[in-house]
Length: 262
View 1 (tube, one colour):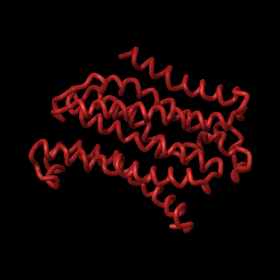
View 2: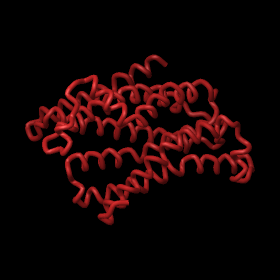
View 3: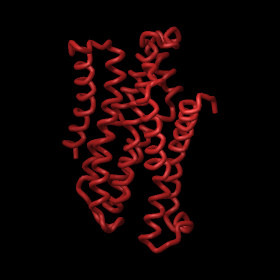
View 4: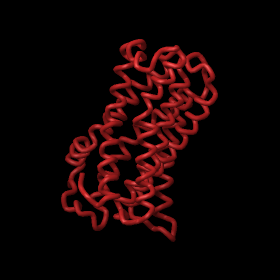
């Protein structure tokens, strides 16, 4: 267990530092520190998303009994990925610290001048995302590894696949950061982000309830009344921020494809 945690603790920050150094050192690129930090953080998030989604597909496709079947990759990847959420809180702060200093950014003059004020500003602006990461480490991790007692690996695998939307989200942020909203790539990526986020995050818990209903021969509308109350509470708390973020994506898509404000 500790070996896997240590591996994740080295892999994600190490990949970030390696990517940043390469972007700054390769003669054909020679990016600034801020540019390298922002792109490297998005790259690491995308790599983690691909790894999580791949693990989720392997786990889900291997479980014939959605409650009893187990796959060794479930707990292993959870242990490996936990350090990512701790690292990503720091990486998001570094992105916030540097993005206001990117040349030509309209908010450059408003960038905080001191680390303390920058941290407070960052926590106010990214409170929901930071809270999400903290909950993943302090609540979802112990629940997934210890409380489940090896049951429901199929559900865990499906939840891993929610990360399929992350690469398009990261690419969209990079394109917006460097003012590439006018490009075809941004429009195609925007449509892909809208579709993948809706399928793999918004429909995630309705699908899990549907699958359990079929497994237990329960009508879909009766599943919330049948499963333990804490399952409903957990699903609601995890789904609420997804709905909020999806509403932001929809507003952005409306502006992108119609040129109007929502």
